[in-house]
Length: 172
Image 1 (cartoon, rainbow, N blue to C red):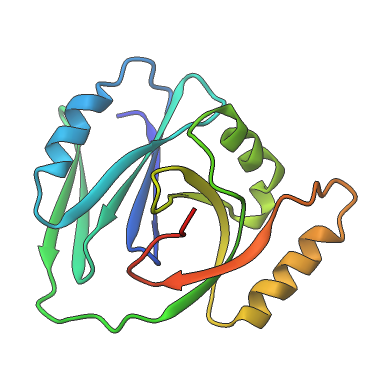
Image 2 (cartoon, rainbow, N blue to C red):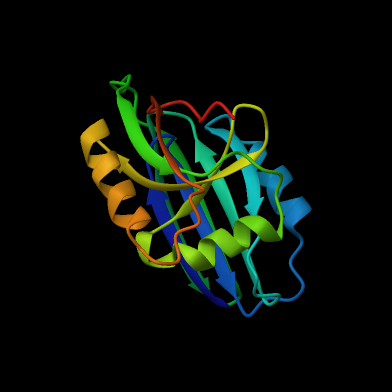
């Protein structure tokens, strides 16, 4: 089994899988298998600059729980999804974010720049992608984070504060 990490994030509910040390990875087959689940709303790749790594996001429908089991012989990772059976309460969530852009190297460069800020990438409502930092409960918290980032010497002025509902996506 290659080295991997799985990070769960909210707004929207998603799992971010990163596999390191993989050069041949049948992403298309994996995507089809995952999208076959009625508890998954979307699956998409995130471009990273390491050509021996693969990252993809699995967006789960609200109220979905997951378990992840690793097997050693053969090396397999099993994702099980179950419905919680209760409707979640949706709330407005605030982020520091980039403009929407097509997938590619420009997003991967943003990851390098904002790595210490725990940046992730979301598909926007229009199908582009945005770098997002946070998941703050208030606009003030997001504005404080943006102020801290913009005070850095290397800040290029490419971020802004935005919000959307916890079950939604950024607009552009």
